[in-house]
Length: 109
Image 1 (spheres, rainbow, N blue to C red):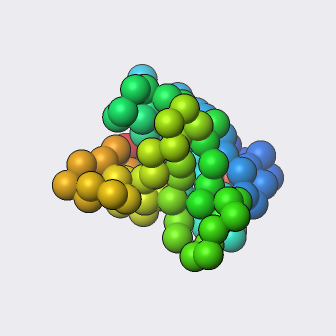
Image 2: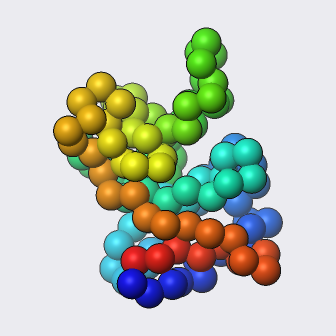
């Protein structure tokens, strides 16, 4: 496993995401309440760009505490911590370890 500095924490404000390329992989990084998460940028349904998706906390829903991303194309939902699909947890996308250190966002691949 290798650590990659992908952004400054200031570049990803709370409640937003950013797409980055790491070792040939497209990764979507999100800041949810000051915690950073990283998942594959490609939805398994039709390949939608998850980095352009909607964080669950942004939506008018009852339970805003879920940490998930909704694909902007067809609204498939994935857990940001595990990458699991919210309706069918036997499938999902790749989730990456992300941390913040000295103001930098670091992805481990």
